[in-house]
Image 1: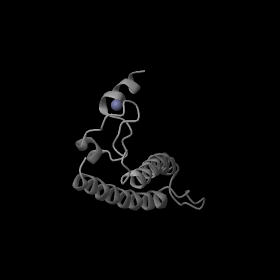
Image 2 (image 1 turned 120 degrees about the horizontal axis):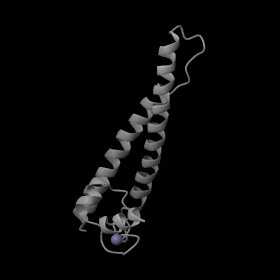
Image 3 (image 1 turned 180 degrees about the vertical axis):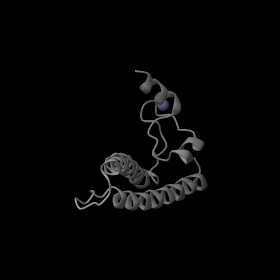
Length: 115
Ligand SMILES: [Zn+2]
């Protein structure tokens, strides 16, 4: 990976972090507990609660990805960033650009998932 590629990945991570943080703020608002004095009908209320569960789940997933991205950002300047944890081969640049927090190359990921 050359300096230019590393820089592109770094910028990509920063952009992703900013967009996830925005989404998290929105999700946190949407997943606020429903107030008891809610004047809506019972069915609507149940629907809202289901929706709230979905928001909470998405929120959790986003927070996990945010942590992984922050970790990747802290590592991106390191010499061993972009190295597969399993086989120590370089992870394809295109893959890192798409998923900057990748810790494994596609081959190892397939094997790990196949277990
Ligand atoms: Zn590998």
